[in-house]
Image (cartoon, rainbow, N blue to C red; front, side, top):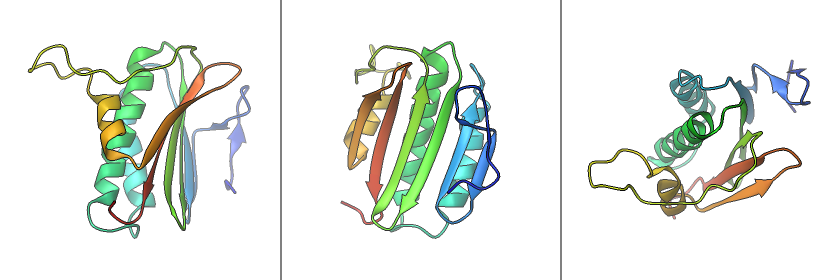
Length: 147
């Protein structure tokens, strides 16, 4: 349950809402790359007492990759949702642009672009893309224990 959530015209929660125990949802503004460190900070707080050492750091890295991809590769808002359950963590970034992202490597050895989904694919326990009527969600899951 999200506490104190206002909804916007898409039916998504507006702003940041947290029920400190298990979940947060955050609306990400179009091309607002300041949202990346803010999302990491919120996730770190959510995961403060979660998982084996190193698991929350992996979750932060993968979350920042998904958020960055949504903000850089679409020209629209996005919504980040993170849910901690007894079995693990699920993070989902929904955008409102059609098109399925595909993992690809960087074009050159010193290229810093093109690694996001490759990292998600290699570090997450599960990940995928779920189409919506408008847009898609890219998600990953991590168990609390190291695989």
